[in-house]
Amino acid sequence: MQTEVHTYAFSVAANAILSLFPFIVMMYTVARRVFHSQSMEVVIGNMVRYYLPTGQDFVVKNMSVVANAKSSVRVASVVMLLISSNGIFLPLEVALNRVWGVTKNRSYVRNQLVATGLALLVGVLAFASVSVTAFQHAVLTLVFFRHVDNAAFKLAAQSLLQISAGFLSVLLFFFIYWILPNRRLPWIAVLPSALVTGLSWELAKRLYMAALPWLDFRSVYGPFATSVGLMLWAFLTGLLLLAGAHYSATSYTLKLVHQADIEAEAAR
Image 1 (cartoon, helix red, strand yellow):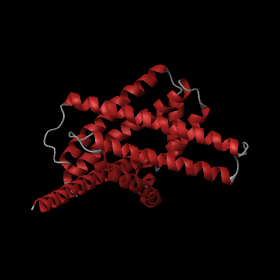
Image 2 (cartoon, rainbow, N blue to C red):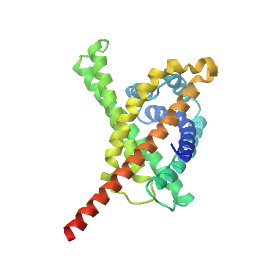
Image 3 (cartoon, one colour):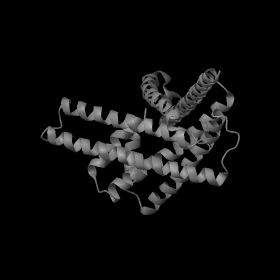
């Protein structure tokens, strides 16, 4: 409920929207130019539809078209992705440092190096998830003897996609909580919070999607309704991420205090 928390969340949301579309273009480009995999393209489209609460078909269709553009456009997308993703992690580091009681932030250069590394890690995790899901889809196709136009196949494929996407969400929150603060943290201090936040994020997305018809952004913003809907969701995600960080810092601090009390009692 503090004012600066909303400031951090808005900053993260703005840069997240700026980096989202170049990231999708990069994913499509690598799937086409490096792996030459049509199944990976299908999985990428399905994952984008799963993760985004609004404008799914619009984003998938247009980003797929942009990925077929000239090489200069693809290069510009990568450059824009690095710049905007660094903009996400800069305010996040400041916020997480405050949560953990760290008084000194990294220098700008060190922050950019850490942010670039995190951006690359996110890309690797995303492609790993896409590859695993594409493999699972291929195995399911063989199991169903290529009869993919039935409810059982679609249910199984959707369930595997949800498991893969949920696992990826938890990993993303974990690495942000673990790497971004400017102090050494034991992984066990942030893993429970990453699990809780990842699962809460999935639930919050469903609630947000259910509320979208009541919000009716299109009647107010017209053709910009998709952008507004994504921006608001990114802002809510930022608030949830910071709430999870506060939970992990508070629970870990209480655990240390409890251990200190036990040791002091034993020393007596």
